[in-house]
Figure: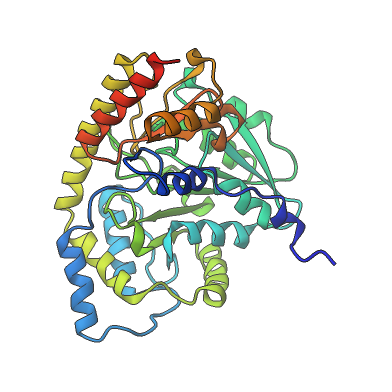
Length: 383
């Protein structure tokens, strides 16, 4: 008897967490690995959670999440983009964006369906697609195109079985963004081929060149798009595990059906904290300004030590090329960790076209960034 399902046994563990776990057993390590803000969640948000506990908010909420929180998310979305989502049945509160992604894929996919993933991409997309029995189809992006998904490359990979496209801009791991014109070229294909889109926009607030355009804000795309977002990155709330999905009533309803059986609801105290986060955005904006300063320190430092790097314009990642070292991405990351105690993530874990690059998260202090770059420079000099 096969005790573990085949589709599960074929999946490798997260390449990000592998390096994180190694570093946990070492001293004096500077981690540019895990994409987690070094900021503590702002006090007003923590205080809202404490106050909720003191008032006895310890029960379940609706499967959909607190209506007050859904209303605040709807209001914020409409104010920022002009796109309206009905908080009653077009918004679902989830336990992090990771759950929202899993729910979205399971709600729309059947075995044999194909899903387009652009790479380099976040490590969860491919395994979560495989868990549904569907087939991930990867489209490579290239640094010469600023790591944007090109319409021609997308069109080439479409088949009669293609049902959905997963988008992630601002992008993890490259920091790439796509402007409205870029997205409209993709939207034309989505409309032409009757596709659904899962748009992971968790880094939407972290855009340093212009304003982020949600995919659902494009003409005709609201009814085709499940938009995923949350509070982990921009609000420094990774451990609170609060995300949400917005989309057409039928798709969000299908996601809620799964959610109510496997998760029931997100923690009520975390939902109360998220509500405060939407009300008090000043500290979030200050954190974004600091990320932008760190971005410039990272880019300048990489250039000084001889690593070419595409300029990231979103998220908090740099994706420099290490091809001039003659090492593979994994060899570079392992040797750098062992010799200089700096954690970076091999680009290859984000897809085959990520080989020759490493991901460096600049979600650490400027002091640690400068020290990490100095160590990387020493490592390069010794090769």
